[in-house]
Length: 305
Ligand code: APR
Figure 1 (cartoon, protein in one colour):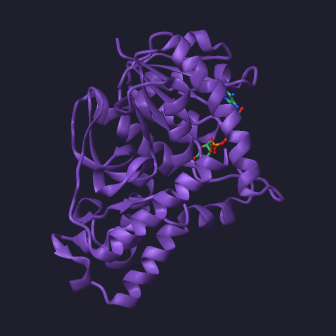
Figure 2 (figure 1 turned 180 degrees about the vertical axis):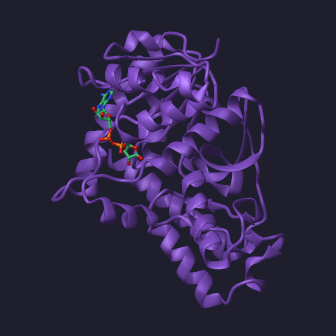
Figure 3 (figure 1 turned 135 degrees about the vertical axis):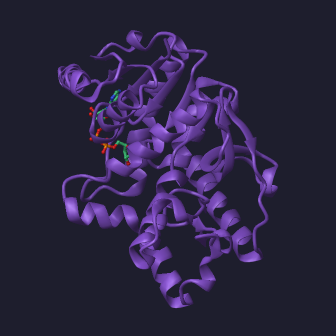
């Protein structure tokens, strides 16, 4: 039986565990440092199995040894930014959490594929690679799936099209510097530029770029978790089912797009070995410049650590 572990039983982690189970992708272990939370949430999710009809077993624990020999580990442990906290403070706090989590992954699940979700995403993915010492194919970050899904949703809201009729791709770092690839955005197979006027496209892209902040503003005491957990579960499914669709993920680049030794969102194919291929799509000069800028911000912040 496939074994999946989710580290962090907060909003994103617990919802991701639920999605993995409902997709019947394998048995799920939910781990958190807070006593009772992973146990209680796992039991609650498991008690939905007779109603939902899934076969995955779900358990919760505070003990990292429970992740032993997992096939895939999804990492959502971390803090969200609190009022008065700078991005740098958050960076340092989450870096300490990711370091300790990844030491445990290296110890107990040395052959796993790691899907990072904790923010700041690209920097945490780069740190996870360093701490685990894994092949970069086996450490991948979730951001582009979420950002692209947000853009697709706003296009659906604007045009009335169905989810299956819109294709978007957001690359670059997960944050203010993300890059919407407008040149390859289509609605019912037509370029978006033929469907919407430029000012509407610009407004929608900007809303997607600020999509996380919009949710925080509504929720007030937390950040998005339904769509982020969908993105992570989708990536797990791509890996387990060796699907290799071209999707945007944060990957370690070794020369692709002219970038080296940095994690940034790019189109890639996920399969049973992790990142099977980075797909070097054609970008416009502006998109390329924006991608480079994004990568340089990730590098600068990683060096800050
Ligand atoms: N090991 C395991 N779990 C930990 C650790 C650790 N070292 N440190 C913190 N946690 C747990 C917390 O106890 C908490 O239950 O991580 C969980 C985080 O949950 P939430 O605070 O609900 O945060 P969430 O909304 O799930 O976001 C988690 O995902 O999308 C990103 O920006 C988001 O970085 C954030 C992460």
